[in-house]
Image (cartoon, rainbow, N blue to C red; front, top):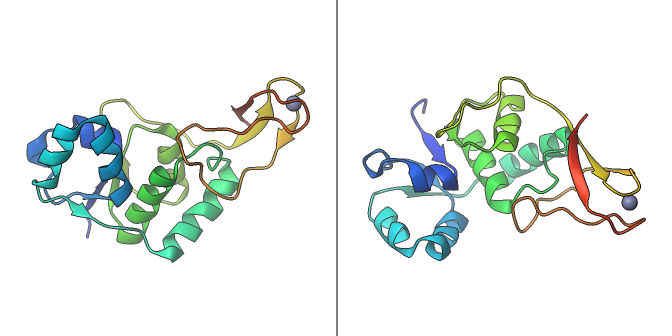
Length: 164
Ligand SMILES: [Zn+2]
């Protein structure tokens, strides 16, 4: 299975169409792509991509690590599913998202960047209020949207991720 590839949405949008055949994606990406670029979505459906979903076990394993590293804050359901899919299929994860790369690295997975350079070290995040400075625990679940953080329960300011 060394050659299996899982593509994140930026890869799906920017990779040459000729290289997409046989790569794996998840269902929710097709839905996202239909909103973003209906034409590309149509083409992509005809290219022989494999639409798959991660196993429950792989989702809980990846979720556990994401809570530990703090990457769970503001990661989308789709992105978490993609990491879990690559993890369960022992596939190479193709992504420019530093948080997904960070997770893949922690899980001992192989990953590749799309156009950017990619991370050279891993890190842990803390979720901190920009107003009162309170540090919050990582959420247990992904967000509906990418980079969607909650507000501080003490002062209502925005929460930001910082490297620990
Ligand atoms: Zn606050």
